[in-house]
Image (tube, rainbow, N blue to C red; front, side, top):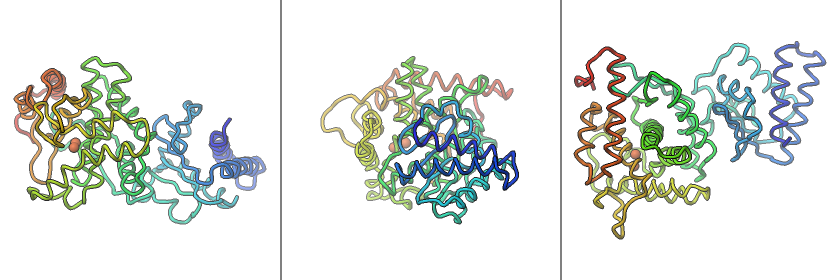
Length: 398
Ligand SMILES: [Fe+2]
Ligand SMILES: [Fe+2]
């Protein structure tokens, strides 16, 4: 058993013992002693230990702890707002017991702190920080609102944890230039599960009201749409997942765009447009620099605004086709962008977007890819309409 696994296992045992026995009970104190010993042992090998708990995944640093797959404490901790745990300094036993106490009372009352409260250990503990993913930066409160007349494929779906993870990921890239690949993959795994989870209903597309949340929700949506399209095109399971990661990261370069340009209501000036159009190159660079095995995601980040006929940006140096994954992401990207309210225009209804996409087959989009996409989304819209008892076509509800 590795140090991080032992540390987590003993932490869970201590939490169980604390749930059973009063303070001062020997069994309880002994469990805390053992957990503390394992924490210290871990700190000797890893002075800065970071864990993420997301779905069934336990991530330590940059590696998934495979042997923790069946460990249900990750989900329990995440459910009370502890998706991330960082040990940043040497911890005293008292401090650790204090932290465990806090976790036990959260578990007992089953209260997840609101995302905004979940800052570094409530600010009291200097050495142990925990909270929703996003503890490094500000975590704005977000709510996915999808019920207010949201049409078509926008189905209410709770992807709060995934949205937190993506926001945190962008923050990490922006502030430290490091791409947390394990978390990105965990998000995609979790999206894949969500995508298949509901047999009757369609897609967990997230809709966000605040415009500065746009890149987060858009990244999630493009990832899910790309995976669904890849499945629709009968690609292999490995390709579906790899394309999903590429979809999630396609706009990563936007972390380099100043916020006032990113959320500007109204048309961009020529200079601002130039800044905006740098994001494919910046994104590809950020991904390559992260030195992880993400070649395809880098290619897709670079190519996702290049059109079939060579239009778009960045301008290719010589005529060549884009990667198949980029062709899929390109279609899904335009669909999600047009289906979303933006500062400068209202969301379009699904059918209008599909017509728009179809008209650009062979010019902007690969015909086979775009026609498959249209077929897939029409199928969903039909199911949604049937389930709602409404006619198939939406009546301009956006
Ligand atoms: Fe983009
Ligand atoms: Fe995009």
